[in-house]
Length: 361
Image 1 (cartoon, rainbow, N blue to C red):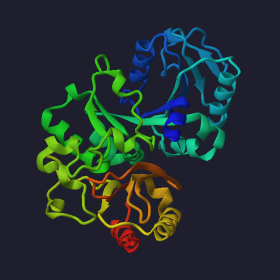
Image 2: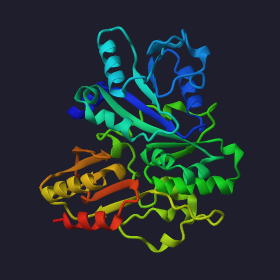
Image 3: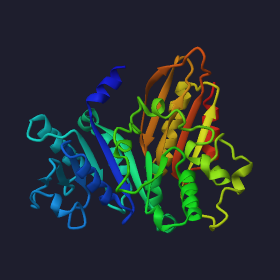
Image 4: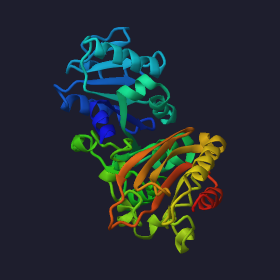
């Protein structure tokens, strides 16, 4: 597929996020140390004594782009992220800089949405870079409290393709499972892994293709499975997200028995149908939904079954930015169907479900 070929030539970008103190910089240092010899451009929202340790720096100067001792390049986002990415692109194309991938470490208080949107908004950036994945680090010890108090932390979880839980050794199993079940409810499509940064297999964090439309559903066929694979160990704690566009009998029982109910602003729901969409009606409805609810829609993606098209359409969006492209043809043995997931802030599931049902043929 031509699009897949083009994607393979693009520079992969990993967006590393997580709340203050969760362990992002520890993970980043480990990547830079372990990936010695591979050239990585690091873009940091904040740059100072608390970021990458000075012993990794060749020179700690006021320049925007700094060479690191293992051949990496580090820039501070003093300017606009778009300008920084374009500067890196121009220097790489001119042979002045050599790097294979980019890691963006966001500030602990940041909503990753605007960072993700950058890759949709500028054609030169969109053609040159591809967002490989959003990786969010959650602190096991303080995660519950942070999610209770900080909506930005919920957004960081909602945007994630991979969720890493740090400091699991500081909590008991009951508290860990309660946090895990809550993360599944907020974002049922991200894989969840407890990490010890000294031992994590970094290959699982690179080349995830979590954001790449060509591979999103080929790589993870269980994405949107009836019971998400990560919920399988959560027993009846994992039913908080609903799978059929309608709430099932477990809706009142999904809270962990050892914790008070957490009324998260960010949540997810899934829409499924075996009927085909009318493409024009669907486009009109989604366009309207994005106009009204765009700021509250964090991530939405899925496989669409469209009337008159004999292949799946792969669809995804971030806030107001939405796109679709053709995926694999439906096989004769397959029953074409639609699966869509919406992750956002207090989204009116009934309005979305009703509207999508009205777009079916």
